[in-house]
Length: 515
Image: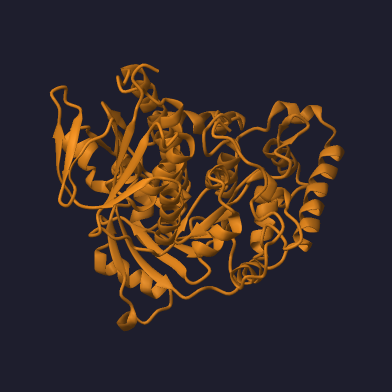
């Protein structure tokens, strides 16, 4: 390469900055490319807990992180699914990994399950065939102290973690491996004659200059938006929640290995179990509840004394950048975009941003075609997750004004087309999606009671008795595996008491950046 990138400046720390630093450091030679992170001491985070999705498992494996050490340092617990309470008549599960075998007789399991439902000889919900749901229902861990499990080997799980502790954990890892760290405040972003970022002025270290800049400055977006003028695409007309109120609660026993999303008057409340406490919050629409009303509703929902509760308040800007990569700057984290945490995708978008950056890594000439392709890929990922989150709201059956308004949102053409095809055929076009594929769609659609008008034609070509036996075998196999697993709280408590290295601690496998 004639003109390689020799320096990267990451502006902003927190989860986004330190994931970027640790990941880039893992794949770029420190002798050839200097990575510097600048973080302001004045900017803090509200550490009430954060839920994640399975790609984080592969990221930690790529970084060579030993899972037990991560769990202890970040007060983390396992997450096998999300449960949506009160959105419709009964709880709706979104499990990770396959439901059952994933495929049965050449078709997604969903089609055979639907065929047997319509025939009247299968009363169990679709999610009942998920091992993750079976463990979650009993508050069981996905591994024992003696052996790993298929869930661990496949990486079909995620974590609940303390976001502040996670950033500190990654900071220690990255700095120990050669990332340069400065605590300083950005005073000015200076553009060069071509309109790219020339340098930044800081309070303590003066001028800082690099070939490539990563904007991890959060909703402020000091580089991408304020300096480079990239427009923000607002999605508040479709996703109505724009505020959150948060509270830390005592640790739960038993400890659920899943995230709860409970419908309230003007939005929904999360409950995230960490080892040392439980994170709770209420994502709501300011059109349908005031700040004081939302705080009072969350406090009552958590069963707390209002006089002894001090909730924190957050404003959320829902949408994404028009261009995530502009000239010599890439927006990562909240500066790139934000979708409400209904499906726990915040850390995923950070991870995806830096993975795609390496896939499209430039030289210092910054070929526009690389940035264009990167921007198309990132935009598609945000749009896909937006559609999935909207699906939950469109299928709700509540009658409060907020929920009626959410149900009345006109879906984007991409989601409208998917729903129309599903309603008519049961087939969806989500198999190749980066994060939430067809199994996730089926879990939400079936859980909310929206089933297609007809079953797949190929189910009529399969012996129904063989399908009945296969469904029964899936349930029996899940029960057998569940009997081998310890309680989730028991496992996490033992881990944090230093009960020795447990089997499967590293999660199994080394992963691949391209997997």
